[in-house]
Image (cartoon, rainbow, N blue to C red; front, side, top):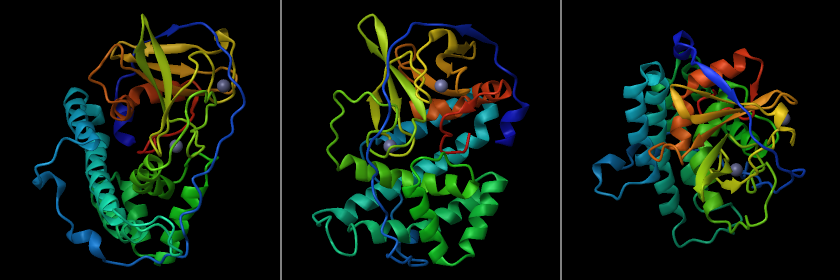
Length: 319
Ligand SMILES: [Zn+2]
Ligand SMILES: [Zn+2]
């Protein structure tokens, strides 16, 4: 994001910690997204009720939105990306609730696909309109171009992203597909019983994507590291001193950096595969929301990338 480049580089200092063992990774795909369902232009998505007008209990999205507002006030350099994130989160929340309503009481084994799929696909034009209006210029242009293209290209884009588990998104249209499909991936994942006990791999146990970030949670006197999928938001335990990119276990090759500005965020690097991932230490800051704080700490990404590390999996906004 261009707004972040004018920010100050945080003062980072290396920390090294101890070592564990990991094994090779393999898991299941969530399957295909039913390319046979056609898009319905200008359909029901535009006249849905506004969630902030309803007296509902605070959702995870509302928690994230509140956290993003707090961080935007604390870190003005991240204001633009957090403002876009807030708009995206509001859309995602609304979409998730509509998917729940569309699937309520219906079978998931219809020949035409899951019962919520028409609602999902009909929502895409509204999402394109939101991105065109609210996103940074490059992504807004992609959304505009997509809105002018045939709906079959939308189906292809969404299907390809849904199925492309091995590659990190690189193109603005892929980040757009990721942001749109993320609540659906979470919706589908929440309906699939997952056996996480004993799962030791670094790829998401549901959708097989690389983790977008780490989360450290209090465990006894220390903290346990979990990995978090940025797509379906599955969280699973993973050993602390193993690179999730290449299984490197030599602690001397796994430097960890922190910055004064974000003392609860670790930049966990690997000098073997030259990737990094940020971990949010909730044992140090219980107010943090991993997804949102990861986005707001963009100076850490700039710092790592200037030193030749590539992010294991970019976040929702392409950072
Ligand atoms: Zn996943
Ligand atoms: Zn590595």
